[in-house]
View 1 (cartoon, rainbow, N blue to C red):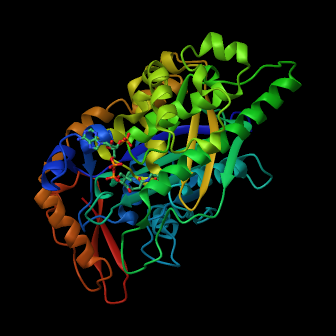
View 2 (view 1 turned 180 degrees about the vertical axis):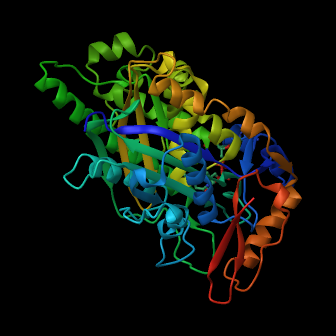
View 3 (view 1 turned 90 degrees about the horizontal axis):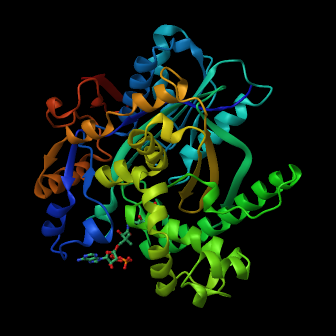
Length: 456
Ligand code: ACO
């Protein structure tokens, strides 16, 4: 099949949020620490009524209803998640309930887990399936869903929750560029979840940021090498730079890190440029010549100088992709795809037509990839790209319709999540009216940990 990529995309987030200025006050930190320092304004969160299964049920149902596709048109469905409520039973098996009436049980794919990377692994698997001899002509669906929660303390304001479902198939308006994946994986303990009795990760925040930046350097280096090799075969011999990307999206633990990451990519471009180019294109940055990437993870001067130098670029290529993350927080596996959704919601199809969108996916532990999408040239009314863009244009309105909950009530609900985490034989407390209409929710957990869901 030609032009395998994303045909349709659906985004789900909880109907309630806490304002980060309220959290700053509640946590007795300086005003601006979360809103300016981290770049976060609101954080979405789930009560006990929602778990990762219900988030994924909701997003899949919404995508299928909106696209009006028959349930038997899906031949592969997989889930990327790091929110584990069962060490054996996949979320995918729960989602099969939605397909039951259609009789379609011939659906490959299962869950993939490594921190925030599982969604990207699933997307790659889906594309690989479509391009393989196993493909049976049907669509693949990739689902990413997570509830990101941290214990009270420094990391708590970097939580969030959400889910994304993507329909993957041929002749897509957002094509995954073939042969252009730069990957870096290594063994580190920056963020992990060794304790089955707790919903919270163990996290070394500073180390996780350093690992993220190092993985970005490595993946970008490999990606550039691969695209330059492709170009060479086509007779083009020049370095790839950020100028070759019209947009750049990142996994977003918090928005400030993304601004620093784009600056970091510019630093990469700068270090690999010829000295003539360094002088002509990177004015005022000459002092940073001859530095090595691996020596600069804690170099604040580099960070500041390139953040300043890349500000215009950030505003043009990346800022619009942070709309969802700013207002909802980190949603782990779905974070990067929430950025993609934001980008689509903030631009017209004409703006996007023909553009290359770079994407950086990072999952602690660690697994990371740099890859790219190519938007189709056709942005005319009714074209696949125009339809994709208009399907997500209500994102700001939907986010604005959520309910603001006080920091006190948010904390109480976090405590409730802790209490109910491994409990059996209960119906979650809470008001169903606090969910968006059409949301799946957890109805009961019986004495054998079996979960039952219903739809509002
Ligand atoms: N006004 C403006 N900015 C402020 C203020 C203020 N009043 N106070 C602090 N800041 C700035 C700081 O200068 C800092 O910015 P800088 O790094 O650009 O200088 C920023 O706010 C954060 O402050 P720190 O003191 O560094 O933050 P803290 O140590 O409290 O925690 C952290 C931040 C490490 C991100 C923490 O929230 C965390 O551990 N989160 C989870 C881990 C994470 O998200 N890692 C990212 C990759 S892995 C993943 O995706 C899970």
